[in-house]
Length: 547
Image (tube, rainbow, N blue to C red; front, side):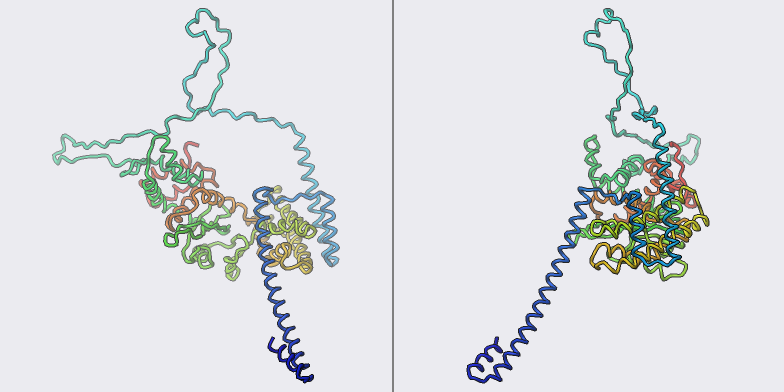
């Protein structure tokens, strides 16, 4: 503005050269100001647009979770698959050898699909018998039979003749008495002929926790209700009150701590067994802990490691990092691991394994496929091609299961049929990613696959390593469901006790053993079991006599 006024005054003084010079400077300054203002507005608009896009994606994800299907399965017809195959052939400049390989992979997968469809059709034509209503178990206690007579019969039996006794119909009735009281007494005796008059008394029975009135059965029921059936202690206390048993929350909490103290040795034994596995699967989930100073919850993490060979999990809590999920925590968790390969998602906290000789990092293929499926609506042409590649890769694993291949045969089959598919997939993705914007969903899906290509294909040479981490994620589901029920843990010690319970009950789930009967047996026998025989109390070695 000052420059403009100087030019205006110079023009009034009829000094044209000076006024022209000042006007040019004014125009230049105006352009610079306009340019900087335009750039600032563009930056602000870009930030607003990015924020709006992020919110829109979050809302779309929420709507999908609540109102639409959650499954990621996409079904293509034979015609659609042929069209997709032709699009790949047209979009990638294959060499003659690569074209031949691609065509062989296509024919191999389509031939298997054809055999699978024929087998399914033949099975559907077989007569299927309906199972009807499940019978009531014979060993369930029966009450005395009730006979319902017609009105007017009772008191006048001599006036009627029973034509037909009627069919007995059984109904299930919940037990009216939920709890029984088992009295114990330990008399003190003295032998008549003992000159020392030594007093004798029976030792404490192992069935109970002395200094409390909790039996092993009651404690096992409380723990299973919380960590298997996802019922927090406060809800169980309310139900007990309705049944006539009034317990203080502090009492139940003390019982819980006592149980965890008893079985901590078993937890450590199971951890040693899992960490001795050659192959591991890893997954984690946030686990809120109450921070009394901040008067709110803070996110910590429970990380699960699962033995691929046995399926047995171990949940771990670490405190190297404030959240328990950083690289330092993971390195500390795995410091005693003696294995070779680990399967996980795309989390970068495991990348350090790639730098260690003798260790192999594998990435879950499902986590790579998921963003491709989410990009289906945004870019169906490219997303369908990517999804079909993943489907064909999964078909190879189906064939392996059908043929019951193991060991070197399994690895060789993967090398012959899965590896060419991955190579074709990589060639197509490297070509397709050049033509899509970097902020698009399809770019993220393609970039994820290309960035983690080595880790995604490492499973090919390891026969016992699965294609994905689904089994590990299924085992963590109980913890996630329980967390939704009781919301948070009181402190880090409570979080560690939860990890202990989820580990041991998770082993019961994998081995199909009754967790309540197992825990009841352990509480009754752990004190009398020699230390070198503690391993026999693990779910892996425990034999259920009632099964």
